[in-house]
Amino acid sequence: MISSTHDLYPSRMYPEPKLLERQDPVVYNRRIQQSEIQEEQLAFYERNGYLFLDRFFDETQVAEWKKELKALLELNKHADKPEVIREPGSEEIRSVFAVHRDYPVFRNITQHPGIQAIVKQILGSEVYVHQSRINVKKGFTGKEFYWHSDFETWHTEDGMPRMRALSCSIALEDNNANNGPLMIVPGSHRTFVSCVGEAPDEHYKSSLRRQEYGVPDQESLRHLVSQGGIEAPTGKAGSIVLFDCNVMHGSNSNITPYPRSNIFIVYNSVENRLQTPYSGKQPRPDFIATRS
Ligand SMILES: O=C(O)CCC(=O)C(=O)O
Image (cartoon, rainbow, N blue to C red):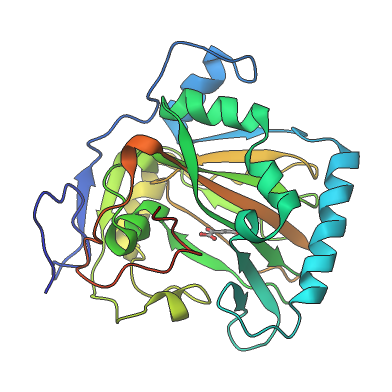
């Protein structure tokens, strides 16, 4: 039974999709209190729902993380554990979750002072890591991520009450127009797409390989794209993209020879802790959604 009590962003409970206006701020603290980003960049984030910072990390730093990633992938090549997600239709690794919990090097990245300062500026409070993962989009065979708002899932399946979270994607290789970079619909973070279709129990077991529930319908997408277009922020390894929890995004398959691995760190405000999932189903496990 799906509950709609105090649910500002109901989804997967109506027979038709709905476009709902965002009820929450995008930037929670407009008074600049750090030196990593300036007022115009903060305003860009507020307007568009994302911010791209070219070469935020230098080559030496990235080289160290790539070495760690290589070791991590080797370690998990045949691992049968829930944190390791395989590509649909093959045994290749698509994502590795909870890297901040299981690997000290990646835990340290989540605490990087520069990133923390920007995130706290935007979310206007202390923050914690809601989720971390590395998406390994291999050359030739790395598969797409269909359009979605992260918040739709975090709200419905994890019980995240309000839009007060964001992702930081760190490029470990150059992201170019062809190797399946993140695509974003600017301005879409101001609209919540209430999706159609009740997901099965333990939906995450299939959705992390290929998401079918909690994805927007084509008409809603057409509308959002007609308003904001599509941007694919690309740049050298070490660049970062910060994006709002409700911005519509996705990415294409990578049929080029150029691999594209990105670390995703999701920060949530400590004032926005998870509650009972709005779907009425069991919460997803901790490796996908930190509850404590
Ligand atoms: O790695 C990508 O290109 C997209 C990732 C994404 O949207 C997700 O993991 O939710």
